[in-house]
Length: 132
Image (cartoon, rainbow, N blue to C red; front, side, top):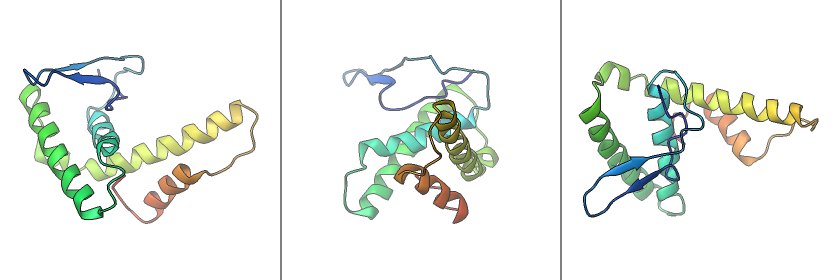
C-alpha cells in the first residue's frame, strides 16, 4: 500500500520530537513503493522552488532526499539496485501526469492544450531529464 500523494501538504513534523505524521490517504492504492519515493522527490522541491541559485536548489534536494531515504530505510528495506531505477520511475510519473492532464481535458470537453507544467513534463521525457 502506498500513499501515492506524498507531498509537503500531507504530513506534519513535530519539531520537538522529530516525529512525522502522514495523513490524507485519499489517493492511497496498491502499487510499487518507488512511486512514493518519486512523489517525495518531486514534491520536495516545494521547499526550495523559489531559490534563484540552481546549485543551492540541487544541494538542498540532495540533502532532503538523503534524509527522506534514511527515514524510509528505517522502516523498510530498500536495495541500492532499486534506487538506481528512480530516474525510470520519475519518467513513468511524468508520463502518468501527461496522460492524466489530457484525460481531464477530454472529460471536461476541453481542447487539448499544453500549459507550462505539462510542456516541462514532456521536455523532461524528450530530453531524458530525471529531475523536477
